[in-house]
Length: 187
Length: 173
View (tube, rainbow over the protein chains, first blue to last red):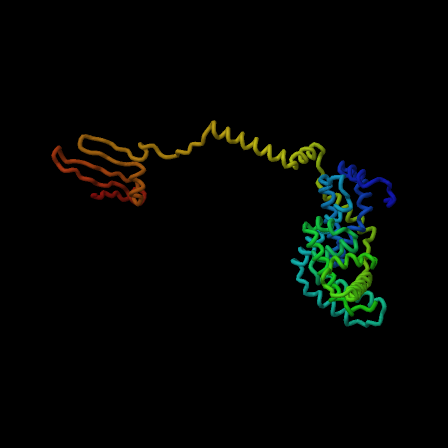
């Protein structure tokens, strides 16, 4: 699949609406990494991300008829991705006992911290823990703002809340992340 | 993620009135920027091309394969105004059917079924649903009102059976 496919999103979407599998593949290839990034940072567990990404694309292809080309496909996709990932994360937290997660952390911490590879893993682990400690809505607002560069207004539309609520989510997540990460990682 | 994404202006907007002096605000801003530097350490592992292909295959196959005329019909029903109007039309049709052929709501038994009276010269026999319900412990109950003669006083007796007709009961009332 050629990543430089010169056709616009709108043309691809129209073709997908008519059942064109190739157009769907082009559209998918254009945006799959973005969807994966959002899901990864919201769900936080690499073993769950593939299923989550698949749920997003299922929804996209099922509901693409409802998408109006007058709006930005990327913004719509961000919204579908974020909301699907939030739902997925909540369902997953419910069904997973998460008893063994503490064991995994202990094992990682007990290993020799001198190795550079392990340092990277520890850093990753601590950042994940810090992100995990903030609520999924706060995390999503934070991720959409600073990783996906969405505006406050777009995030508010995505999460179905007010601009003020988004600002509160972001400021709380910043404070919480600073509290969790301060002094923990040597940069 | 670049550190510049949290601009000083945005920081001020998010934490307005939280800091007493400009120096404190700048110091806090810098401490938040270092958090972003730390977060940049977190790497998002990419999906392999095999995983991407699998996800696409599953997602594309998972969507309902509708024929175009069904698509058109479904799209029509997705329009709220049309669905609302159709609901009203269907409601009106149903109402007209109901009004033209009303349901028999008076499902009560006729008077004859409720109480049957048999007359003879010197007796009257009462039976029917009322007697059945009143003396429900008996089978086929009936009340016999009879006179031995023209001037004799009337005598009321209840006749019925028990145990599937094995016991015949006559009860003076």
